[in-house]
Length: 378
Image 1 (cartoon, one colour):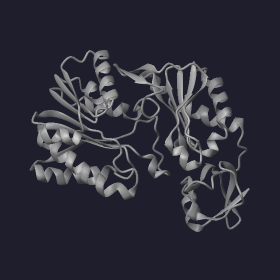
Image 2 (cartoon, one colour; image 1 turned 90 degrees about the vertical axis):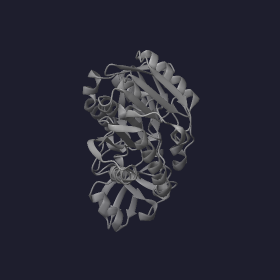
Image 3 (cartoon, one colour; image 1 turned 30 degrees about the vertical axis):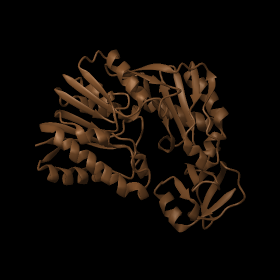
Image 4 (cartoon, helix red, strand yellow; image 1 turned 60 degrees about the vertical axis):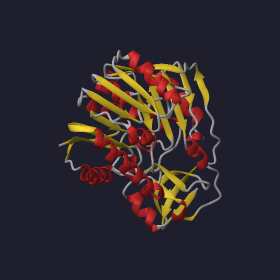
C-alpha cells in the first residue's frame, strides 16, 4: 500500500526524522491501524512505515530502505539493541534493552531486570507483531518471565490499555544492583516499567558532590539521596508507596542518618528552614506538551528560587527535566533568573542527560527527553 505525503513531511524524512503527522498525509488507502505502507512523495519511494489513521502521528518509519518486515527483520533489530548494551552488564543487572524509535522499533519498550523482561507495545504497528517479538525475545534471552505493562499512550493508537503476563513467571519485587547500590522495585506495580533506569549515570555523577546534608526532592525511590550517602539526608515525596520504598532502599544500602518527609514539595519548601550542601530537584513532567510550558516554567521558578534559599554557599544544585518541552536551555535560563533573585552566582559543573541505554538520536530531537544540569552556588 502507498501513502502520499506532502513536501513538509518529505523534507523531514530526508533528514531521517521518523514521524509523519496526519496533516502531512495527502492521500492514503483505507488502512487498519498498524498496517505497513510505503511512504511516497511525487511517486518517489521515501520510507516504509507503520500507518495508523487513528493517530495524530499517522506514520512511523520502520525502514528508510525497502525491506521485508518479517521475523528476520525484527530479530536483527533486537540483536543489535542487545549488543549495544552489553557493557552495562558490568555495572548493573537492570537496563533498557529496546528504546522505541531510537532502536528503530517504533513503540517497543523492553526493560531487562535480571532474568525478567518488562515490555510495552505502544503503537498499533508493533502491537500487531507482539507474538513474534515475544518469541524472538525468548529465543535470544531465555528469560524467566516476560510482563507487558500497559501505557495510556496506547489509547492514542486506538489500543486497549492492558497489563498482562506474556511468558513464564514474574515476581513483583526485584532488587536492582547498580554500581555498588541496591534498589527494591516493583516490576508489576511500579511506575514506568518498574524503575527510572534512565537516571543511572546521573545518580552516580550527582552523588559524588556534597556529602554533608542532602535534600532529595520528588525523591521517588530515593536514588539520588542514597547515592550521595551524606551525613544526613532528607527525602521529600508525596506518594505513600514511594515513601515506603525509600525506607526499604535506605535499609538495603545501610544509610544511617535520614528522614523521609511525605509532603507536597511546593508546600514543603514554603516552611523548610534547614540548609543543605546538595539539593536535587527531579520532578515529574510538568509540561507534557508545548501548551503546558508557561505554567510549568512558573512551577520550576518557584522550586529553584526556594531551593537556592536553602543551599549553602559552595553547595550543589541538580536540576532535571523529563519533558522534551522544557530543555537544558530552559533550565539554565530559570537558574539564572532565580540566582539573581537569590543574589548568588551559579557555576555549571556538569551537563546531564539520560543514560546510554535510552539512546538520543540526533535525527530524532525528541529522543533527548531527559536533560539536567549540576550547578554550584558561589
